[in-house]
Length: 589
Image (cartoon, rainbow, N blue to C red; front, side, top):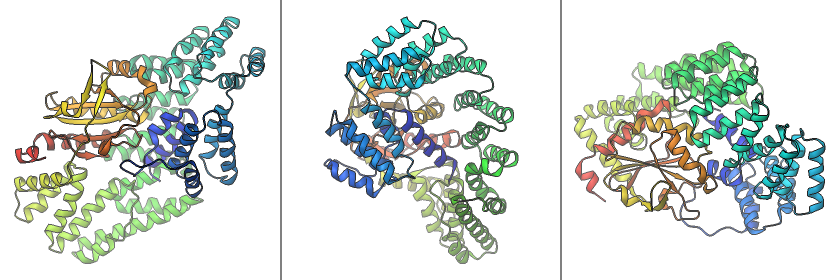
């Protein structure tokens, strides 16, 4: 399991616990089904869940469909989720969906019940569980909840937990309504660390990064022994100030060596560093300074790096880690096999036995999350194919990958193999554009409301420009994390060359969008999505971030990519390829 997979799985569970259903779906739900299809029946969706209980998409589909088909019957949904908790006791998703359904089922208009819950809060105003029960019974989206809490704040003017309780519910719903209650909480109690922390979380959604850092520093000052706040502070500089992100992450690891946040800080830093050398340095710190069991979640990513740089060292790591207990042991035994094959294949290449080397290399089955190892394997296979004298096949292998995810390393290799075929760089570039032309497809038109300015923006408005289009929403952490790296690339171009558009897919967060845009400094044009519209081949399947690069003729040329410090150059190369395309490429439909 690599760092990417670990972070993604953890993010899903975190979102399940806290985010509203629409935002959970937006951030994590993705399906491979394209085109308009009839909605399946509730019974069919229920059967899908039973057949695929570990697929979050099937659970979410059933959850959404039940609520749409049975308004007012949330208790039945709760019972169904409880049944699946019992049926699939090891499944991590059903207990969280049960908690969500339980909250929905708790809503009531019964005055006697509400009065009883209110009296419970009045008897113990510091009890978060009593506040939560009261708020859930009223309904967090019910305007009446604000009126009732205004009364409680008047009754308990010196108790910071009263406004904080409502603020916490709003924060977990990613609602702009949280802010005034958080400010009231810290006004009453300036040492309320968690309230300061949530003000930082809220400011991320408003794009107020500078103000947010000040709030987070106040959380740290109020609770300096809490490593989470210092870890979050370090992480908040990722992409915005990589040097500070690095220094603070290492400091967290040094200051809190026994905390889970020490390992997480170095793990995030490793996965988010710009160069392989920086990443390996972080993984070495993890490997050398923490017990094997603590660092284990990140060691497979370390292995991936080493496989491309030093296969013998990757093999030694696999030997060291294979004695872990449980499934991890099986994983490392498999990685050890891959390392041995990698080493054997390289040795055969050095000995000029390309056919035998290729046979060995073809046995290697790396994880789809392998980045560096997979690229290194691609180059080795191309080298082995080339040594057999089949230059064109080696060239074609690399061209196929380049057309999907171009990189400087791949381009250099293409020039090298092209030269062996008698092709100069101009001829290689012509082949590149021919391959891009084959995969380029006209983007489905759209016309969406502008958040800034009047009217709509349409796909046709961007004709003649390269268009970077991303689906996002203000509460989406991965979206916000990617934006600084987008910005680093986008600012290198004039607006007449490149347009950058962000389509917000969560209408409930509309109030955040314009402030986020104006405060963050990110230069994208925000547009509002329309629920249920036909997106055609610009479909994001309710997931964010989802990215497309569209050429001057309105065709999708690149898609399904994410950008970070380690691959900013890939995005720049994609844009440059489209801007520098010959007339024959841009004029063809």
